[in-house]
Amino acid sequence: MRRRLLLHFVLWSALFAVFVWISGPIVGLAVMENRFGPTETNRSIDAYLGALTGIERGSEKLPETFQRLGKNGSLVIFVRDENAQSEFLGMMIGYVSWPREVQVIQVPGPTVEKELADIKPESVAGVVFCLVEPPTWLQNSIRLGSGIVLVPVTQASP
Amino acid sequence: MIVLGLLAALFTIMLAGLGVATSIFARGRRINLVECVCLSWLLGCGIVSLLLWTCGAFCSGFLLQTVVTAACLVLAVAGWRAKRHAGAKFYVPKPATVTEWVLTVTVALEIAILILVAFKHTLGWDGLLNWEIKARYAFLGGGTIPASYYSNPGRAFSHPEYPLGIPFTELWLYLWMSEPNQFWVKIIFPLFYAACAPLLALLVARLSGNRWVGLLSAALLPFIPSISASLGGIVVGYVDVPLSVFYLAALGYLLLWFRTSDARFLIVFAACSASLTWIKSEGIILWVVIALVGLVLSFAKRRLLQFLMSVTPGLIVILIWRIYLRAVHAWPPSEFGHPSFSVLRKNIGRLPDITKILFTELSSMAHWSIFWLIAAVAVVYLCASRRLDRIALVCAVVIPAVLYSLIYVFSTWPSYSAHMTSSVPRLLLHVMPAGWLAIGLALSQTKRETETL
Image 1 (cartoon, rainbow over the protein chains, first blue to last red):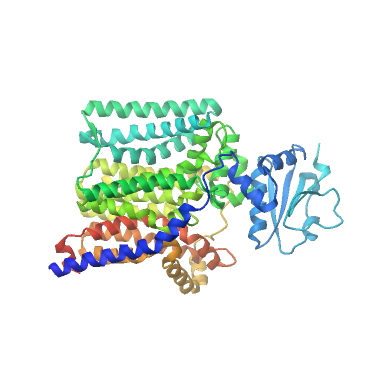
Image 2: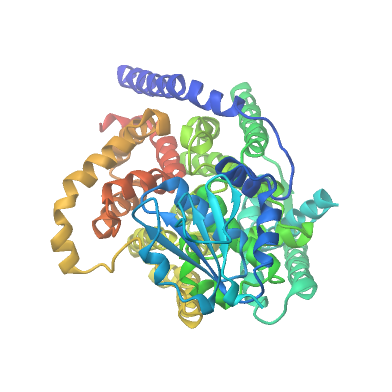
């Protein structure tokens, strides 16, 4: 009986020792990385938009830009299919453009031609290209940051 | 002012939860303060978020904040009156040996470190775009999310169908801080951990009779890399750890009720299991599993009716949320197809791949170290004990993991394996604290029970 108890003790001690031995360095590294703060209100959005597009304080600048498109009309966002960075940027644009309605369109290639023709301009305030190249013939395009272009659709503006 | 607002928000959440927890435990004469505080956070979050959602249908802005604050105060007063009426007193369980002292200090230090670490990171992808987004939109809408949000296909990426337990807890903080502050809102997640660790220690100690084993389980808990070092953990603002804490509490108190027949434990089970369905859609799977496990236990105990009453709140939350989503024409989720036999027959060939991915994940050292190996050893121990409650615990750990894997048979992603690889680590987190409960009980299995191995 004593041997069984000893086995029980040795088994669990060994398991816990290996567990901590493996996870200790991983957890330790995670605890040490980064530093506390900054305590800014839009810390997460700004960090992501900054990393993706190079725009500083994107949580303030982008909504201001979208407000200039007028009150009505939705925002069409083009993103690259199966490109996580492009899709994430498209979602971020959807996030900051609230309360405007958004339509996210995934395109297979790096440029947009056919999909653009399907848009009804009367209900759209602007088109945003996230890591997607707008057609060269499209005028009035505004480069908001690296990999992000806004094209206002004038018909929908007041 | 922002920090003052934050403290007021946390205080009101705790006050509401403390009121309810005290009311439940008042009949016991002696109320464990640590247990009460841990449950206060869990119950408080559930109560405040539900109040915000329901009261938000009738009022908004400052009035909404006032009404919910008043309700929190009423609950606190009700708890205090119940305690006074029953002549109950709070007590703090003190460590009895040097080992217990060392483990208690370790657990406290770990909690402090994890609170600090949470503020070193930004919100993760899902933390921002699935959860915080709803809190922000509700804040901008004066405390309510406009119906247009749910029906806009362009924002379907943010899963409008997910319940509002965590987003509306975040909203409560925003209302008190008067701004949607993405830095301070992260305090919610380590606080769930701070509730989880002592609760795990307490539940293991009560169910095993060994306090040091409970404390050891709690002290080892943060060594799982998924909690602090990878996606889904508390540092990125995902709801998976909060969901796992509710599951642990529901399961632990169900087992305590089975052992003691104390109705107070069943009330806590009812509240925590109902909260599962209010935190995340996957909480319904956990709720079904725990309801089935409870059904078997209550049948064996001949207390079926009492148990059925305790699962009613969860059922009500599920139904009301479904009706609400239908009323606001919520955009349907598109990640999983409607489960049917024809789809099952068509995709049954995925099973070998799914099993392979599951085992690859379970053996991932970067995510879990050897946690699942230890849990597997614990499962063997508990099955060998041939006791119904221990086998029920095994089922409550194993069945959700199996069901979570099987749902990928219905995945609509172009690559179901990519879908599973990206999300199954977070789903496994849901049963992780319950796994520690199993480990704690296996570790402290009596001599006679270990001899049967």
